[in-house]
Image 1 (cartoon, each protein chain N blue to C red):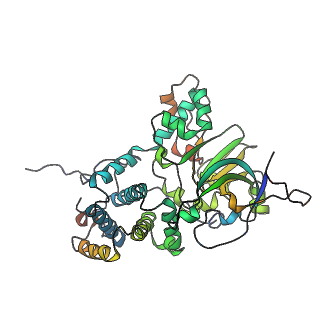
Image 2 (image 1 turned 180 degrees about the vertical axis):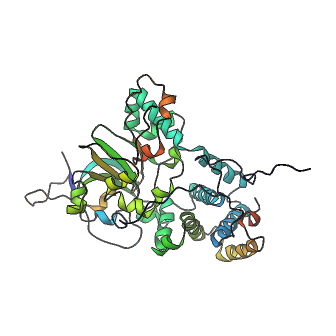
Length: 101
Length: 218
Length: 98
């Protein structure tokens, strides 16, 4: 990474969305509780490859990495996650509608 | 009876530490990754791994961490030479002295002097002294900053509006392992006799990362 | 006594915390940090292994050569000792063990 991307411009700040704050909180809480380490999180992001930096935002990569680590920690199964995601999709078309708040 | 409807009157109303309202999620189409976050959170709560209260508390704690905390530490170092020594020897312990919980990682304070200017980066990911300064800005996490500041730091600093005096050495610190860094910027001239509280108002987040310097007295 | 070291040139895949731009470069030990859990094991959920960690200071000249903005500017990075070789002095011999 160091020295590679020498033409790119620096992005402006954005304020954090609630869902991003929640991803951050899940990361801190689950790692503090010993389900994974920050090293595991980084490794999962690195394993996504360079493309992930083009196609996903920072917290999208983080939620994917936290999930990867929690699956590896056997916190829940892929089937459980998949089923729940299907249920959530029909709750509404926005994050606000879909999360029970 | 009609009543006023506030734009930010949803689950977590209030302002983010930058002074702006949280970005509205509500009117954007639900994404795959947002769906994943909701699913994970619900499953973890149902399985007793997390509670809603813990999540809310963690978010509140994150919100309470903001650059003003780091600014208070810097200002105290400016007025209290013994504290400054302790800060440079063990910045985690010195911050804890002031009531800030740095957590398990080790914080190192880097002192700017007349001829040395320090800048912090994490080229490998986005390590940042979060527990003292809050969440890092987008530009700090960008590939652009992470790749360029280790190779052309002066050009990057110039883009932030900072040109260093001749004869200054730039020292870049790549946060590759368990250390976290905070820059102790130089105290601005013309602030003799100022209280720590007033001095803290001059200390910007960018000056504690090293892409800026503190404000000058008006 | 200034201790010169060189970052190993090996390029294994996977989670290593020694930046690619520093491989093969010579620097000096700026300070020793103590022992920390090897991230190369922690990343894969393997049993914790404490390893010595040091901060190494490199000149920009050393890292980037002619492309360096200012040759005397420096870069400090935290490197695990198993990634370092002992330095080579100007004459070309290997320095004594620390």
